Image (cartoon, rainbow, N blue to C red; front, side, top):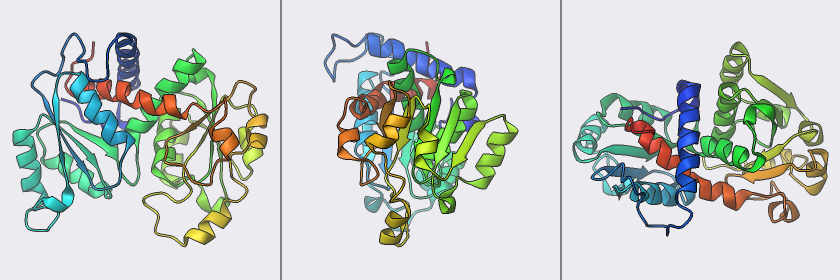
Length: 310
């Protein structure tokens, strides 16, 4: 049994095994419909229980489809309908009940502590579908997408992030940059630098990270340009002030023109004003392929959790 909570806690050979398995499974589904089951039926009889404390479209859809393609089933819990959500049952008791009925638990939460406590009391694998400090399933899928499009290891590429560097996606991307040994340029305002402890961990582990206060400089020579919503789900800030802080950190055609000619644009979605329409809807944008690949990688993450990777 394995948990999938943060990229930095998982050995690189296991992360590579997940990506390799996802690649094979995607190839094997070329002639199959969305709900056709994989021939090996690896998770037959298994039940994935999901709980969403935060809004979700891609994570919800992709995990539901992933477990069904693996021949398992899924059940989604709504926090407001549980005794836990109403404060009349402890988290430890809730965790034990979920462990009794389910085979794995995927939690999308507004609390890192809650994720840690569920892990403490559960006897089944737990997957972080998003927490305030981490979005590991998204970023591992992004690594898969980049290598699929570029047809080379991500360690040979330069990745660029433009925008808020204090959110969960960039945290996981920093962790991935160390694990997969790729160059990561971050373009952000000085007030929105990445987490200091995470940067210290990256430096200690030979991370190749550069931070710029200029979006153009950050993008120069990059193979991939990432961004995310400036106002994220975890933000409790003066929205108009924050949006004003990021006026010069919008991904436009000018920014993309400073990246390599064959650079691609990625965005985990949903989008806001942080990217221009011509970039988001242009030829360099691979956001729909990026979203679809969540299914394949999350299938292999589920198999990793059950020690069933091929």
